[in-house]
Image (cartoon, rainbow, N blue to C red; front, side, top):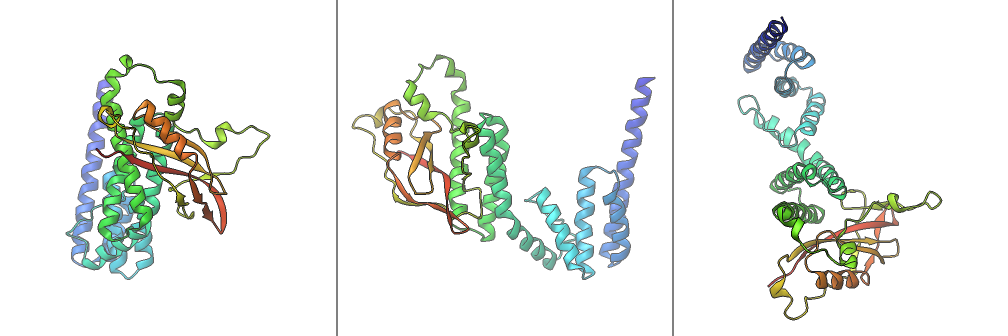
Length: 311
């Protein structure tokens, strides 16, 4: 009996999908014949129904087309924004999207992409800081694709370029960590100081006592903050002979810069070499910056620096 019920449910679900596809096809034909109001009525019912997500997305896409064709551009742009937030890299149906509609979607995408990229980067960093690289990987991949789209659309600036470097660096480190994972059990333990240097920096709130308020630490993911400007930021070169035996020559360094521009903490996210790691951290603690600024006020900032030791 249970099998019969499940089979019947599957049949009804398939029939509902087929009916939805037929309605969508009918709406597309109405749109193609310039019967925009009639098409919009059908599409609205489809969008508000319990159909499959892909069907609802297509219905919303053509709803935006109809609204734009009817001169209801504000509603069309609002719907375009909703679609782009759900899928920042959405590809429009070329059979229905006129050049003017494509231009409208491009304008909305240009406006939204910088904040959507930062959201993906924030999600990736949070997962990495909690040592969940598998969870971070799709966010990094999506951020990388969105950055490529932003560059193609011409909405590129120094902040986007910095994010590109960081996203690529985290992707590379993730892949390197995955490749080393099978051998991790036989690797010799690092010294206590090197391990501390390589450990991810805990969030400020995690180390603050209940009695001591800690100022928020901003990052590149915060669009309304002007990043710190380096006054002194010189990486030491590897000692003679060390470069030849270094197996890892790329890494990411987190430096926490306070409101005066001084470095309060320096942390290597991935060890490169036990000796060289200590030299980097020691040098970074002496770096100086013009502090980050938010609303005209100096703020604490976590800056991530990509390290690439050249042969």
